[in-house]
Length: 310
Picture 1 (spheres, rainbow, N blue to C red):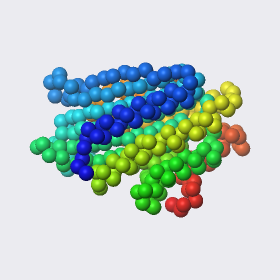
Picture 2 (cartoon, one colour):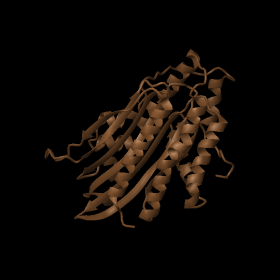
Picture 3 (tube, helix red, strand yellow):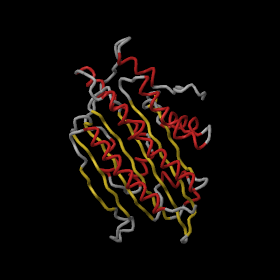
Picture 4 (cartoon, rainbow, N blue to C red):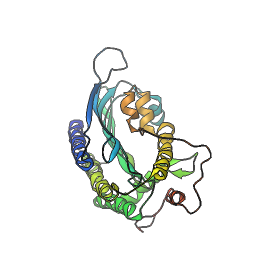
């Protein structure tokens, strides 16, 4: 199957629509507002170099903020973060499309989640010189439940199964490694899947991208159903806001997508849509020994959740 950018784009716009409908149904109160935008190219020509649609749901019954963006953008030169990693692409024009989401629930017992699926293509003199897929999904609980984490990873392993026995292990390990806050010596959450630069066979790799994109709701919605009505108080809310600070730290310090978007002249509001609407930091915070808050620390290290061997 030849690299077909438009087929990927059509799938991604449909995926955004389906996830929005499912999250609105799960919330039961708020709806997504859409902000359609266009990109101005680097050459100052005034023509459009793609665009996207950013959708944000605010102050819902379940979600304090849920953001999901679709973009299809292009440029004549890669930003420094990308060209340094792939010097063979120097001087190539590029086009990238993707869907990225971050959902910040209101209830501290319901985890924050992130997912992303994307496709990239580079051309020189009218010919494709590189293409690849990337993406994944990960889960960031504040008060973790083994049942939820095991379901999350079982869903990930099942969608990986048609792509070989090592696919889940490899992309689970990649997720653990990528979403790691070195300055805190902890993972961002309990992981999931992460992959990049997938470019073996277009048809098969596109199939995997669709499996990851479609599998997100299967992984997350059952957790929403179990935890959205769990009673909580000010203590749990304050801990949730404190732990959200780690999310901000990762996205602004380490996340390659944030860096690529800002360096390539992307739309700042859409790029930073992932940040939580409310967050706090506290100097020298230490949870009480043997408290539910202290228990989280044991989950912020890579773990073989399904007993499959690392």
